[in-house]
Amino acid sequence: MTASASRASEGMGEHQVTQQAAWTALDEMGDQLADLYRDFHQHPELSLQEHRTAAWVAEFLRPLGYEVTEKVGGTGVVAVLRRGDGPVVMLRADLDALPVQEKTGLAYASTVKGTDINGNDVPVMHACGHDVHITCLLGAAALLAGPAATWSGTLMLVFQPAEELARGAQAMVDDGLFERFANPDVILGQHVAPLPAGVIAYGTGAFMAANDTANVVLYGRGGHGSRPESTIDPVLMAAHVVTRLQGIIPREVPAAEAAVLTVGRLQAGTKDNIIPDQAELGINIRSYSPAVREVVRRAVERVIHAESAASAAPRHPEIEWSCTTPATVNDPAATEVTVAALAEHFGADRVAPMPPVTASEDVGVFGQACGAPTVFWFLGGLHPQEFAAAVADGLQDSLPTNHSPHFAPVIDPTLTVGVKALVVAATAWLGRTQTDATGRPGP
Image (cartoon, rainbow, N blue to C red; front, side):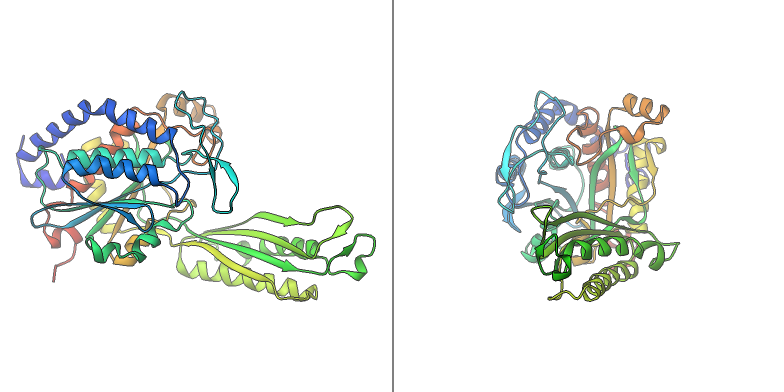
């Protein structure tokens, strides 16, 4: 029973009765959801290629009464259900998988191969748990459209492609998501994480970091390795860039702030006695505040240009910012409303605050584009006993995490908790007045 419902009824009120009916329906569809999850897991699709997954989502939702639109922002799916006056509540899940070779040993492990955006043949796996997100949102969609639901307002389900490329949310916005369908009063979502199944973790304010990726080309003048004086060595240039970049965070970011800078890729040359004519770097930045983000980005560009000039490079370096997403910021007032409902249903001991994480998500693009408050939380997916044993032995960091070839959330109770969390969070908002829903007076 949600916090909003408890204020509207006493004892076994109508909302509590109908919500209990929803949980009974969830128990009855448990096997179906588990089978659906296994199918999604066994048939992953890379970013921008989520055709089968999107078709399954649309096929599932249409008989429930949703107005379903496919191919939004590429392979995205939007489903809308209107039930009278009330807020517009958006629930979001992501569809895509990763180029990872699965090593879980599961009976339903992926053996899929695919071709990535660069034309490379790669293995494909749902190594980040997006299959959990899809399944939970479909389960919530069924309950919220069922006879037990008594809410009023508009429910907007967004199944987003290409989260792993940080492109899908912006692509859906650019395709007129909020103009074509509805402008939400609140955006809700969740992400499965290496926490004990049954636990929900949340944060307020900047909860997940902004992400910026730079692809850099440094230009030199190639030649024989025995005559370096006749060359301009881009490998040495790249080495100085890498070393100098490591001074940006400790020397230019205030100690009270947080940021991470990683050079994850450095490629140059083909043979040990040949000095190449160029070197390539891949640089990744994580930050929480716009000010720090700007400081680090400008410093990265300054260092690259300065080291190139210091080496007498024959050409200016190329810097392409190829992947950028804002920080995921949980609105404090909206988070308070949502967390109160989750804690009332699951118990305060299973809904816990956690510090910001340096992982990134493009869900923040939606709220930034439409001005709606966002509430995003983590859903535990690891076996509780195995997690507790690892923590007791000081081996928590050895547990498989997102993007690992061994990451495999347990089906039970992860799916059940994930479905209930979405239903409870959504019904904490649906049926509220505009003033109640936003925490601010309406127009």
